[in-house]
Image (cartoon, rainbow, N blue to C red; front, top):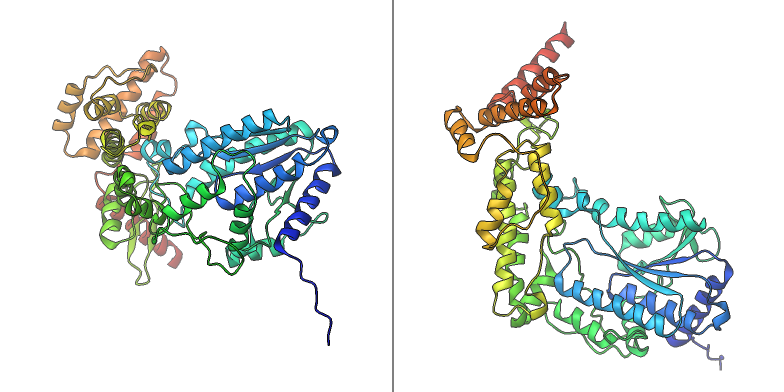
Length: 490
């Protein structure tokens, strides 16, 4: 009879992985950074690292381990609350156990935040061909933190909860990376940053198996609570008890930004609302997210109407369809659209605060911070010359409280009533905006005391505001195209 082959158990694989983590930790003095989102994969990586490091003798615990969470400022509030509590518990447990582990909550700069870009600058809701959010909200804040550690120490090892089983794309990317030493990969863009993926060969089920078999060492919530959070974000509100790798997985629910329009539907938040009447307070957020989406033909037409026919620079760009018909490429949200989104956001914030099912710790929720409001106000007044200064009035009308902003801006010599009179006298809104903008330039130079450059600025503004409507601009584009074709023929 053939000899039965001994099979290594999953727990033995876990113990082997912990030993490997210890080897890598002791191999050099480069600090570690662990990406932590509060989800199952990153929780498993943090827990593995914790178990490995806490098992070492104290004399070897010299290298710092930084656990970082990026708060995009548009996170699902339930998940955000979970993560914040976890970070507090991580720091408290690390301190009480004298471990060189520190958790950090990092955020994008105010200038890079979602609402400053969408409501302030007028960036349209993110889409596959204009995915402006990921770089600003996630990548830049994380890279800044890592680069600081590289500058201080020369090198950093970054631990991530990426897995081959997540998707074919993820598996392919991991396969293509070349190891610089066993288990360590070079970062795609950050020099002197090495990647380590401790669970890259684990399946969804194995992640849950590990979390259920091994107690959470910092104990903000136990791992059963994490599983319950995932269960609340699935359509059937059910996560099976994972006892072995044959048990169906619970891990298909994904948490992300509640405003995300890169997916067709926020399935996790929708499931949370549908599964629990106590989470009904999030319904207005879902409604706003769906309003931002652009996927139906009706919404695409509406969004096109809300966007300026000019780019932010004032330039005109166009494309031709398969029949050769020319259309302009829409630019940022126009002023009316940006005002609309600000009103909608503040209305949702107020609705949540006043909803009967809203938990006490969410009663004062800020979907948009005062710092963001002040930066939006600055952009509208200074960058876009929208001297009506609508933001404080909109805030007070919706929130029924005095606008708390304290920042001083150069005030327009014209009251809202005077500007309204100018608007009434103009032939259309674009002509009004041109006159308003030119008057603002004149006022700025008067305040400077020097008029050097005023003619160039007036000329540039007049160029940006040259057209009275989109059809006129498109006609001009067609004339230019026709002229170019004529010159080419000649």
